Image (cartoon, rainbow, N blue to C red; front, side):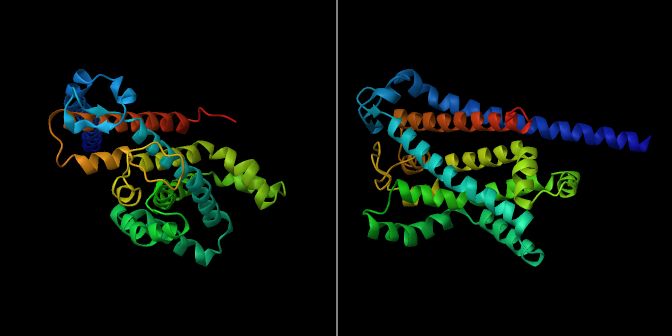
Length: 288
């Protein structure tokens, strides 16, 4: 009877934790909607994509509220980082699990975990002091879309590597033993057995890394240049949505402040879509 009661308490405790987590998410979305309602009503959705530029401090009637350059910058920086970090992260996990010598495997894993734990402001400081001057020697001004892509690549690489490694850890050992019994080489085992078996886990790793890249603020804020423009080159400075919020929220008032909450609502929508897609992929609904 005591075991039954303890199990019941545990079940209700876990249900409460789940409900609390869901409630927090709903409260955050509701808060963003409430704070951005004034801008959505006074400015209208169309002006966020059709205005000539971004100058919201003049008020809702005379201000400019174009978010397209920041959406483009966020999308390009995220896409560039994911295209670089995904193969590097998955390759790191493959090396650690299938190719690294036994005595090197654990130190290599600890190094990846250390990279994942470094605060974003430290990455930004390194990028500002080391990366930006290097790019500036090649193509001024240095603070640019390229700097943002490189710093985001370094930041999301360990996330992808760790999640990909977790997917490899969950691979049933019977798969590898069967492959060895068939005499398949290590490379053929990876391409024909391992990758198909953990496909959904790898997709989830990449998508969650993408979510981190979208939401990163301080590091990008420090290296991207923060110029609101549609970039025609990776060497031009840009401003992402997250950097825009961090840069202007301290002094924003009225319609300007509400427009920044529209930026936050947009970011929330992008992350919700990514998380939903990651959940869909993790259920094995993508086949190839």
